[in-house]
Image (cartoon, rainbow, N blue to C red; front, side, top):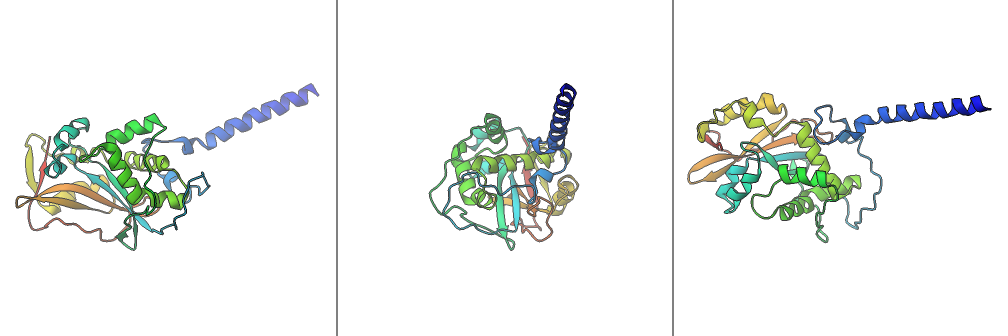
Length: 259
């Protein structure tokens, strides 16, 4: 009898160890540069987490991951120069993850009461503060706007909380290793303002981003400046072919401001 109990306890321990190792990939978060398996459409459970809504779920079939070059936004926002001091120099920060349907963005996902973004996970909050910085208003207003306009569709589809949406986007951004695009493209950072053709920038960024993307420009005083990079993704966060569309004048030089 004692031998049987001993054998039974050892079996339970072995099964627990196997379970932990078999699920270790599900516990990977915050920038492990492995497969994006945990982010895929199939892996995201649609369990009900008590997410309150009476709104009809909006269908979408793809995403655009938008990243902005912070210093360019200072042409638009008067307090931007103070805010960029909190962001690593010459890096792209997150603008948002935007659900699309048939190549068109879904606007105003949340048409009901606006949801306030509150983080219980302080590690996640610190990462959002670093990589998803508002350059116009306070950070919370920006996060509230991005979630209610875009992220709410994701929460509706997967029955996930706002905090899980932000975790998902931060994980995606870090796993795709998108922060240091400027450095990897090997620009000469000694010159504070430089001009490039649209095609030169696409050639520089293509092997680094390695996905279907396009550029957005900010037009200021008869010049255009690199403002955003838009990456086209399917629901499994793989590169999605198709035209994203650029507002840059491809026959005119595009300026980049380096810090």
